[in-house]
Every structure is written in structure tokens, then in C-alpha cells.
Image 1 (cartoon, chains in turn orange, cyan):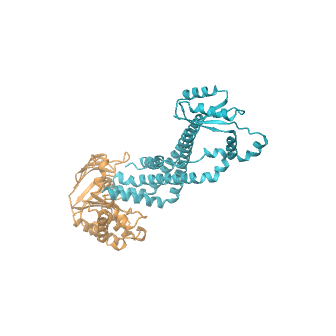
Image 2 (image 1 turned 45 degrees about the vertical axis):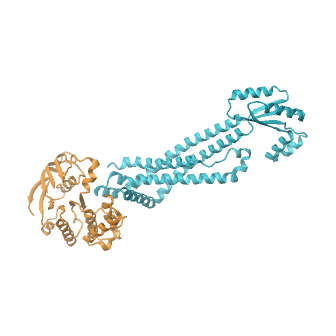
Image 3 (image 1 turned 90 degrees about the vertical axis):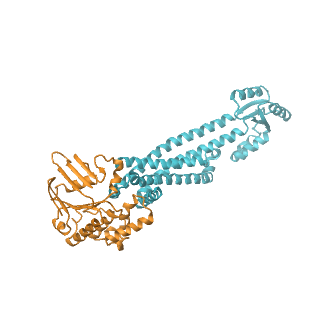
Length: 221
Length: 299
């Protein structure tokens, strides 16, 4: 499903954000990328959704070779994955429904089907009763659950999460991790970047530990 | 597949226009001003062209007769003119009718005319040509031939007047297009600025759209439509104002212009002109939006 082969990434010389990282993630796996701040977790994730390109090496996501993927086809790659961020990235001017629906609108999903899928996704995260609220009216945990609903509403093959519990208290963090576990159980490959090792104990998965851009260790879940 | 996306883009564009209504109203005002000036000059040119056609259709050549000419001789001159192959018709206007016409047109000058103690207006023969567009040389030789008759004192070839009015119409059109063109250019810049502000205000949304796999067209569509809607609304409002000007200008200012009121006026735009103006509005809006998108949304 995902393969990184001798990947190097440099934003500004002389520092390397990633140094010779190689890893493979199989379809349907749940795995973690851990490490302290500045270890390269976010850079690695950005390579997977092609927000940035590797300086050296190969990155494959599904059938796509990230380096060779033309810009005009980037949207096709992005439609196969969902991305969740620490800061939720919801649009405050839009209701919960619209925030989730956007992932289906880009596909041209007919209105009736779109409403059904949005409702199902929000029910999965337990927020179907807040469908017409604005994000500001929700707690941090609820906002993150809306972001997860948006990420999974079009049944992606891959879910990427960058410090998804960074802004949440431990109880809410546990709730969110259970959600990821549930999504993974339905067949979606889930990759979570986190520096919080207690989360990994809560929801076991394979761990890739990064330190100063280098892959230090792999631990089976 | 395309219809829901188009519907979505249209909805987004209208929501945006409503969300940032103050800045959109300001840009709409500039668009209206730009297209109003083009529209007014076109309407003025239309009026001048129509007047030119009317004058061209009227007496093409007027032959003024000697003041002391007896009525019987005047009739003879009129007959001679009528018999010329170039002439479609010739009407004898006697001195009294000429006086009546003048006073009907300039009633304020009646005391001056009366004070002269005699009728200062000569009789004339108003002649229409078979072919109003006949070559000038041909018409001039016909005039010269008639003028050889000692009963004829002067001749005025009215087509020159019509041609002058027609040229004035062309000038008005050119001035309108040049001046309006500059204003349309200004409206393109304003629309571009407004769309630019909207893109910046919606950067978070654009970021999300890119993440969930939106195509360039999907992201850019609402912004392009926004510009096009502004352009179309602006040009439609300008068309309505031009129509109002055509209707109310003669009553409001026509009297003050005196005889000039006949040529300074606004005649309704043709369907083709109106369609062209709206299309130009849409194009200006699209171009304005596209220039901002090219700078700010490199995807």
C-alpha cells in the first residue's frame, strides 16, 4: 500500500528533515509514526499526501509514484485518502454538514446520496445531532470528530492523522483513538503521527520511531 | 456529474457575493459606471445615425429662389427640377410657408421677424433624389445645371449635413468605446482586486478543498463565476440606466438644448449592442477573476 525507499527530504541546507527513510505499510494496517517535535513526522506525512516532494528517494502510495504523479492528477490521489490535523482545519463559516460534505461535493456526488453519506459519517463519530451547528459551537473533541467524519466520508483507502489528539485532554484523546481503531477495522489503512506514547498503548499498531529525520526503530503492534 | 458541480459553484459564488457585499457593491458601482458610459455613447451614436438617415431621406437638395420671382416662374423652376432624371420629387415651398416654418421652430424670434417689415425668407424648391446615396459628382453637376437658371439664387446640398451628422455619430461611438474601454479596464482591475481579497479570505477553505481532492476547476470555478456575475449584473444595470436615459432625457433636458435637442439624445440600443455589452461585462469579470487566480491560486 505504502512504500518509502531511501527517502531524503531537505527544506533548507544543511539540515535534513528526513534522512534515508525506508518503510512499508501494508493495506489495512494501523501504524504510528512517533518521535519528538522536529523529528520529521509531519514531513513524512506530507510526502504521503504529496504536499511536498522528496529530495531523493521513492515514495509510492497505492498505485501512485509520488514523484512521477503529474500535478493535474494530484486530486485523484487525494481522493483515495483522508487527512486529519491537530488543529482540525474546519471552516468556521460553514455548518458541520457543509464541512463534512465538501469531500463529497468535489466528487460531484448527487445531493440525496451526499446527505445520506454525511449523516452516516457523522453518526459514526456520534455527532449526527449536531449536523446544523457551526464548529465554534462544538468542543475541541467534537471538532476533531467532525474532521474525522470529513476524512472518512468518501470511504478512503488511507487515513493519515497528524497529531490528531494534540489539542485534546486524555479522555477525549482515547475516544478519538477508538474511532481510528474502528475505522481501521472497516479496512482503511490508518497512519497516525504522534509524540504521545500512551496513545499507542491504548490502540496497538506497528510503530515507526523517527529521531532527527532518521528511522530509529520499528516495533510490531 | 457536471450539473451538480456547476450548481455548487454558482451557489458558492452567490454566497460569496452576499458574504462580502460591501466590497462587491463598490466593484459593481465601477462596472456600472464603465458600461453606462459605453452604453450612453452608443445610444448617442444610434440617435445621430438615425437622424442622419432621416435628414438624408428629407430634401436632399434645396434650391432657393430669387425673392422677387413671380409665383408662375417659381412653378416653372420646380417643373424643370422635377424633370431631371436624378430627382424623385420636388416641392415648391413659398416664402410664406418658409416664414411659418421658421416661426414654428423659433417662436421667440417672431418679434424680430415682424420688425423687419417684410418676409425675409425666400421661396425654395425642396428636392429629393431618386438615389440618396448617388455619387457626389453626379449630384453636384445636376445642382450646377439648375443653378445656371437665373431664377435660382442658391442651393444647399443637405446630404452633406446628413453626412456630417453621421460622422458625428461615428465620433461619438469611437469616443464612447475609447473612454468606456478605459473604464472597463478599470473595472477589470477592481474585480480582480475584489476576487483577490476573497481568495485570501477563503484561503482556509481552498486548503481544505485541495486536501479532499478538488480539481483546479472546482476550486477556481466559484471565483471565476463571482467575477462573471459582477460583470453581467453591472452591464445589465448599465443597460437599464441607458434605457431610462433614453426615456427621460428628452423631457428633462431636451427643451434646454433647443434645436440641438434633435441630435443630442439617446436612442435605444439594438439587441446586438445590448448582448455585446452584457457579453463584454461577463468577459471583463472573468478576465478580472482569472488574473487574480493566476497570481494567487497556483495549484
